[in-house]
Amino acid sequence: MNVYDSHRMADTLAPAGFAETARPEEADLVILNTCHIREKAAEKVYSEIGRIRVMKEAAAAEGRRVLIAVAGCVAQAEGEEIVRRAPSVDVVVGSQNYHRLPTLIARAAGGEQVVDTEFPVEDKFEVLASPERAAIRARGVTAFVTVQEGCDKFCTFCVVPYTRGAEVSRPVAQIVAEVERLAEAGVREITLIGQNVNAYHGQGEDGAPSSLGRLLRRLAGVPGILRLRYTTSHPRDMDDDLVRAHAELEALMPYVHLPVQSGSDSILAAMNRRHTRDEYLAVIAALRAGRADLAFTSDFIVGFPGETEEDFRATLALVDAVGYASAFSFMYSPRPGTPAAEMEQVPDEVKSERLQRLQAAITRHQRAFNAGFAGRDLDVLLEKPGKLPGQLVGKSPYLQAVQVMAPRSAIGQIARVTITEVGSNSLFGALAEPAIVPQLAIAGA
Ligand code: SAM
Ligand code: SF4
Image (cartoon, rainbow, N blue to C red; front, side, top):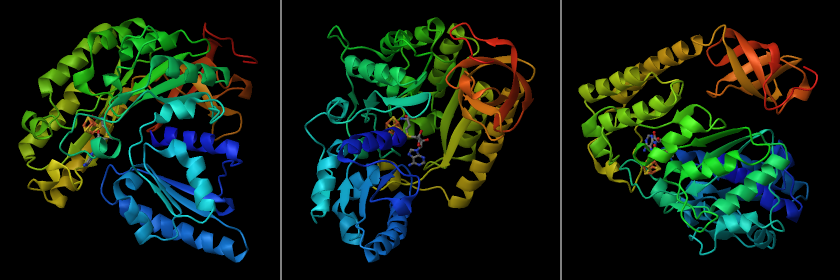
């Protein structure tokens, strides 16, 4: 979501004459877009500000003014404290206010130090969607589109409900307009994003609330869009309509990121996840019944307060039961202000030892999953040049990176690729004969 927000920040500043640069030392404005999900986020931000301050001072010595802005969830959580601790910062802007950046930057350019972290009354997305304010630009053949933001679930370990605010869904018409614009600019794959994306309930074009399943069906009809994905889902919100969409929609990729956090019922209850291990497995089974080749990924937290060796083994057993294609895993990190931060903590060495065991299990499944594709054909959306001359890199339906020798003109197209080699992070292949996938012909292939 921060990647999406950063792109929108750049888009909203473009009419004011700002262009993106890959070289921070050249920048007239540096925006740190921050994440607060785990510990030490704020400390990392302060040390990064220190680094940028040196650049700011060097530029000032040459008579050039550089502005520093801190955005995102650390800005939301720290607010005024940032300008107090780091006076070189010119703007602090919260996660719901970045549509105001052009005004805030203009005020800062006039010499003011600006802090804007109040949750605003106006709709950030509506402001961002108005063409005179921010032309949404494509940056390649895949794009994220935020459809839902914030969270009302209050898992006991998580800061999101405090930093991103209450759950809100964007109206379908607004999302369709954004996706149409991206498709016209060459985007072929859209990933719908939200902290709880499958809790989506935005206003439909007929005025009635729309589920995520309905939204996906609508977007599958947008000309030029070949692939749809969504992330991150909560197991409780995986409704029948969305399960059916996986069985019925060809454009919806057979890949579901469904965080479980723990395989132990008592830990799930202490986390306030509001589902049991069996309920989670039932969701997986229902999805697989509709589409047998679905790949699953997840997020795990080890060392949540009170987690015993037995609880942890239940997590390992769940990893084996599901057979994930990959997964993210984290040591529990106490977040001030959340209920779990007040509970009795698991020692760091135990957390770290469990993390290693969990990651070994996940890697084993990931290798087995990837190895299963050796010698098989996969449809690959070709995204950009690869590492070697003449090579392109793209994604399989299961979100694996695939490297293949193919002409540059094939970027943006889906090619059938025979997998010849399976690496730990990518697959390697050769264009199949024929490499043309029905939707689009590959020019020059
Ligand atoms: N909404 C998603 C869900 O319900 O699973 C997760 C969103 S959260 C932004 C991304 C991941 O960060 C979580 O799934 C969790 O594994 C991890 N996370 C969140 N808070 C954490 C904490 N305090 N310590 C460690 N990991 C945490
Ligand atoms: Fe955080 Fe996800 Fe729980 Fe919401 S559902 S509180 S975003 S972990």
